[in-house]
Image (spheres, rainbow, N blue to C red):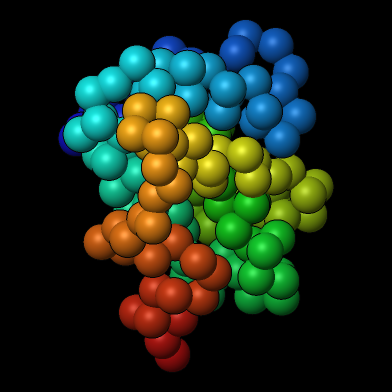
Length: 142
């Protein structure tokens, strides 16, 4: 799955109404990915980790706890490509997510759930980019 396909899938699965914590989005993504193929699940995991990694920078996360920072970055991804790119270009746009505790933790588990559904096994996922908070060393360098 390439970056455009990733964002298209996010857009197609986003509900039209309110979706606190992005639970509906996560469920829709899981339903789509559970239909296979497995490389789409792996590709989704890679693109998600890349998107989260790119937001793992000092100008976004200073003063935010690790888990809150991760869930907030996931909310920016859940908001769609246009919002994500706007936040990447203007870190001030991240503040309402952090201050408002806008989180999308369920998005993080989408690839694992889809993988387990397709294979019957838990996934010991190892993506190219580590999306855990503060793992982007370049983003936190002085």
